[in-house]
Image (tube, rainbow, N blue to C red; front, side):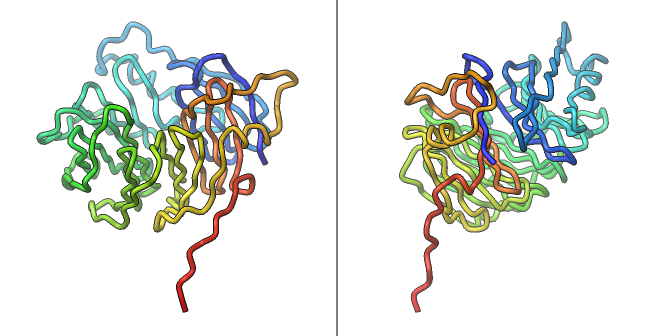
Length: 306
């Protein structure tokens, strides 16, 4: 299964694979507009527009109405929404959400009650991740330290030797239940757990643009900022298993539309997502591609010496 669709002449800001009885691909074409596609076929399932209106604080009744409306056609709650009042991360049932308002200001809301998380000495959080099941929160600060919270309770601040570089965008991916946290500064990937214990660290030979993990933590996908190569690692130990140039995956995918453009050569990879079945989706400029591990080159696994 592999398909592609040309949606817009502008960059796609975000996309998500939404599980359910009818799995969907949600593609944000603008901050307040999301298009839905059948994961299997790429068939269009309509669009939604989420307008907050003239709301200037999260205590306004319209804010709560806006949040409860962030539901896809298959009844899945949208995981991340960019609003005028901050970036919002939502749990799978929508009852808990984390809003990043300013640099180091994180607010946790549970059933209408909001608390500010203790940022400690952090001056800015460069990346945030939320476990959509149990509410574990992870945030990487400007010094490369990882802050972990179990809902509103601080678990600890952990230094894995990551560094903040203005040329690269740090990323955090959190597996379902918080069993695995993947953190990168663009040159190193750290695999840790909810207690902050490092399970594996991997220095890579390329510059990472984005990472995404499957909900069960089995797969970790990365995109190469310079060459456009997509790589997939085993989530348990960060062993690389598959890779291929993204543009080759686009060209190999079935074109859903009758007429469509392909991304110009050298186009940077945009948002990235992967699910438990090994489906990988990504955007290049305004083109979205849904592919799977079978379309990628499988790499030999290291074998122990006898």
